[in-house]
Amino acid sequence: MLKFIKGNLENIDGVAVYPMISLLIFFIFFVALFAWVITAKKEHIKQVSNIPLEDDNQELL
Image (cartoon, rainbow, N blue to C red; front, side):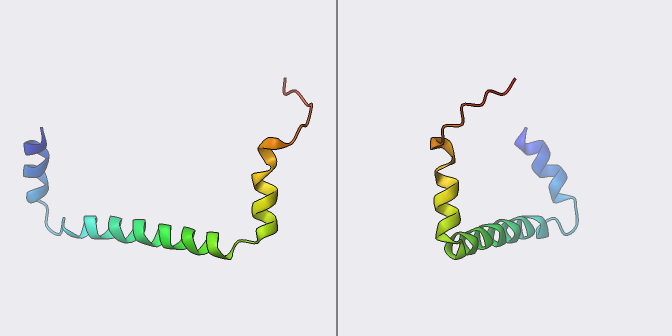
C-alpha cells in the first residue's frame, strides 16, 4: 500500500515542501508552548493544579 502512495506523491511537483512546512509548524507550536509554560504565573499554575482536588458537592444531572 505504501508503494501506491509513494508512487502518487512522486508525480506531484513541489511535494518536498510539505514535510518541511509540517516540521516548521510542529516546531513553532512546541516552542510557543514551552515559552508559555516558562512565563506562566505561578499562582495560575497552582490554582489550576488544585482543581481536581476541590470538593464541590455539586452533581451534574
